[in-house]
Image (cartoon, rainbow over all chains, first blue to last red; front, side):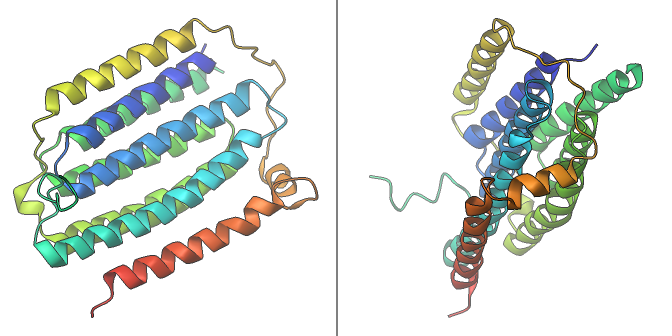
Length: 102
Length: 163
């Protein structure tokens, strides 16, 4: 019998994989993809809480809709920044984009 | 109910394998394709949670729009040949991820959740619409969200415009 804990563990696994990717990768686009994985993991947790704790309120599902709006905006701006950096520096290696590092 | 369990396990295993492929594959393009597969399994997970509207939105926005944007960016930046290497922080990042997972799993397995036995609403679309657009619902965030989207669109256009 699948319950709330199963969904939360699945969400935690996906979030950890995304966290590893965001911390350990050089390619900026792969980092952005890992961040999308983390957002999806959070969405699963929200929908699971909404389904199992308050099945009639649906507040968690409304939050997921707003997270999707913010994620779409984030991807559009993030990819625009990556393409602008690529035009200037011919690379999207996150370890080489260190202009603001002291 | 048993069919729902089988569906959950299949979707969970495929989703986790696809997510691992995103961070472990050397080819950026293949990583993007397995990210699409992962988004699809998340949509299936929403269906097993009887969130039908969210499953449709997930397929429209993530599988349809965001994956196309990501693949377009991969095509435009020609760093595909260099692949998707790890930086020097590979081992610490792995440790951080494992520690984070351990902490979260410990916390949520030792909490007694007050699970309600009420059957979920089906279909959810009218209820979500009432919650989003009615008086005393989420009408203010709904009106703020387009401003954020407009700002993001204008920002993206300004950033990538040829001078």
